Each structure stands twice: as C-alpha cells, then as structure tokens.
Image 1 (cartoon, rainbow, N blue to C red):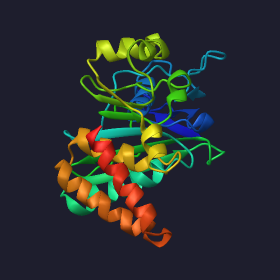
Image 2: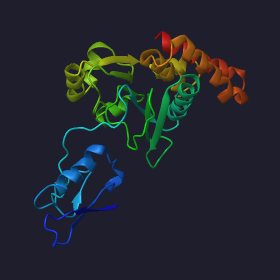
Image 3: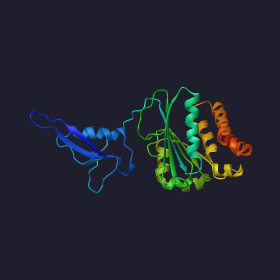
Image 4: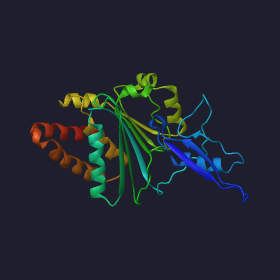
Length: 271
C-alpha cells in the first residue's frame, strides 16, 4: 500500500512538498513507531521520498529508521501471544478464552488470529489483549506479557520471545528437561530469558493429551495453564467457565469427548 504525506513549506509562496512511501509490504504489520518515523521524516530539511516502513530494506535503503517503541494501549493492558499449529485447537481455545474474559469480567478484550497459507498443519499466532480501559490498538501484540509456544519445533524457526516484557511469562510445550532442555533452546532464547528475568515454564502437553486419548489436541491443557499463570480471573472460577464451555463445544460429539477435555483441563492446571 502507498502512503502520501505533505510537508508544509516555510515560504508562503512555495508549494507544499509531497513525499510518499510504502507500508504493509509482505503483509508486515504497521505500528505506531513506524507511523511516527513518517512524521519524523517530514521534519527533515530534505525528507526521504519513496520510503518504506515495516521492513528492513537492505538493498535499496529506503527504510525509515524507527525511534523509541510507542505503545498506544492504556496502562495496565495485558498482551499475550500463542504460537500454535493448525488443527491443534490453539486458535479455538483462545477464541473461547477471550470470550470467557469478556463475558465474565469487566475487562475490555481484543483478539486477532494469524494463519499461514496452509492452515491445517501450518503456523498460527493468536494475539490477545485485555485491560480495564477500551483498547484501540489496530496492530499486533508486539510487547507481550505472556507468550506460549505449543509446538517445540518453533523454538528454532521463530524468534518466539521478541519484544517480551521484563518479568514476562514464557510457556513451552515440550518433553525436554534438564540438560536436554538447555541443549535444545537456542542461545538467543536463553539469553533473553536471563536478561529479562522471564518466568519460564515447560509442560509436556502432547504426552498428557495422548494419555487422555485426545491425540494432538492440546488446546484445553494449554488453556488451563494460561488461566493458572496469567491470573486474569481467579483460577478456580476460570476453570469452571472453561469446563462449562467444553460441554457447549464438544457435547454433540458425546460425553466421552467431554470427559476427556475436562480431564485435560484438570491435568493442565495441576502440572
């Protein structure tokens, strides 16, 4: 997409100068910091024309440099990111979680769900925000308080902890423990965990779901973990709402499926 902006000339008899640039390249998100870079560009004596924002253009060098991070969400707003695999139930569970928070608390909520082109079997990223004030942030969560990775393969494919706040929470679904965990976590991930004093938790949700007969459907296990750690709602109350939603979501598939998912919730929050 193309953006035209106008720089008012200092001399009244001079026409205004129009410069333009591109944003949204490669479906990249557009953030307040990038928009501020556009206005900073207009303040220059010779503004850059045909600029780009949102990408690092290291070929033609048209990118505008970003300044400090700008957060337009109200103070106290909590941001969460959930990395999942298409068909593992992550997106559906997060849709239910945001509904529970919106219906049973006085918090405002916002959610956006990203899918890659394959959908089933592809990467999904759920972006959730909630807080006590109305949320008007038309961009993805870029400074999360809570990050959950539901597939261990992602630790080497993505910068999972990018932007996480100091003291934030990171939950990883994996079977690794001790030395094996340290061996499989990239150096950059371990460095971020240490530097930002991130609260790091692991859970083998695949094992739990398998033992319960749910296959790779780890959504209720991980959702129970979320409500336990995020403390948005008192955990016993949140789990009650989650269990009630199971009846609605899976009741038509039979009580056995309902019982499996309720058991997954119990196993998840006790792990």
